[in-house]
Length: 263
Image (cartoon, rainbow, N blue to C red):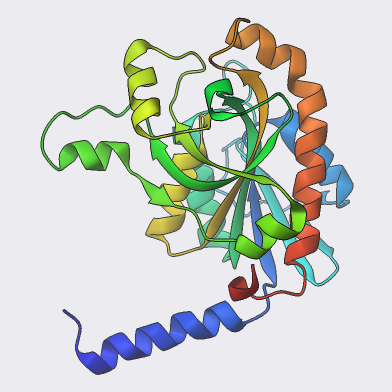
């Protein structure tokens, strides 16, 4: 246990941070299709002098909107196959590198997700995530099982939820687009309304480096619906990305001029 004075000082520092106006946000997005509407909306410019290690495909866009410095990063295209570098590993790495280089006040992980109709999700619904967890890290040993699930709460934003009239729900993350029976059981245990391939990884890094993070997820496919997931995802991606872009713009507008404690 920390000495009384030391703990009190740490608490005061956290309180002071929460009362300062947010000046720098980091938006982490997995796919180029999801990222570019946001880049265009805020007229962000690609970084020509990269802050990331030489040779990595990670891309950063940056600019100023109102009183906010906005950095948007996405993991880029796989250097061998040329597809978006989706999944937890790329998300963890680019989030870690971006926090180290850019020192943001707040992280927004925005992206598309599968939704569960049994939990009330519909195509194009946008959710602000309350809790995140993994559903494919199965370690059936006491305590390691909890580590595998990696359950975390996102930064609480009750005023944002109320003002923008967005839905709230829990997010479950795994590295597969489909859902195995084992994954399904874990997702049910996680009480998830939406599932993605990055959120809990971003949450892990943000928690590790003590940066508050919020998660905005738009539903492209109904996981417990009748259509094949991959087919429905591709069919709805463009339209749902537009809904995601609009929601991210509303969230950024709401954040502008506010402190963390006002969210």
